[in-house]
Image (cartoon, rainbow over all chains, first blue to last red; front, side):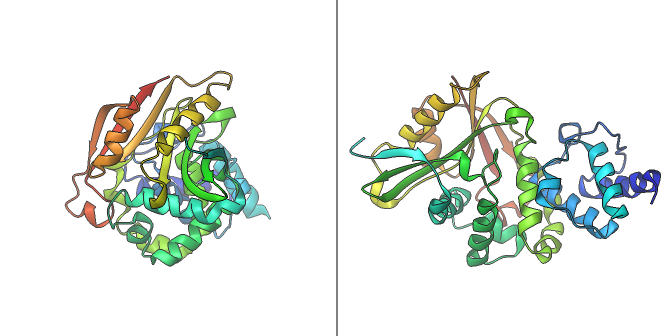
Length: 81
Length: 219
């Protein structure tokens, strides 16, 4: 799957879980850039990512996701496994 | 402090830490958010909190390393968690906790939570990076009235002041129904700086109160 498609699907997930239909994701984006990003919405976002992309993250991998760009790269590498 | 000994928590203390987290979440009420939000029983919630603590992630309220314990003659008497937010470039504590939740809870729990999660953001207070954040505290009934939370608070702050750079503020988040806890922290020099209110009519089905008080102490 190309990064463009990953980003598109991720945008849909973010808009749903963070309850903002206007949200545009950028690679440098972190939790402090998004309203409603708390522990529960974060967990739900990750659950959606795993479901939509049919992947499973290890805890160590999750704790290295510093921004959206790292998440996109990780999704890409998991899809290539 | 009457022969009480303060030390960092260890994995062997997990049952007491689970009790601490449960009682802190209940905040003097019968409402436990782990059960109400995720559709779990309290027994299941205890099992999953145990599992999350066993991951030994640092930097949030589900970290063994964030707890100090007071014990007397081998009996665990009190525990309190505090951490410096974002220490050494770590993720925000809310993300660390979210990662533990998704890693340890069954996926069905999130199907349940999805239906209600949008109502809770009004009560979310993000911790400021570089500040000392209080998680949960608990004193076993037999050991109350001995100033143990004050002692644990002070020891946490002493430890944090050894960091480079040290934090300059400590924050506590307490539900408004928990008046004894609010009074305890005010006696420790904390002041109320903000009140966060939920507009959701049914919020008290999920949390002990519809308001959360943010308290701060300069150190």
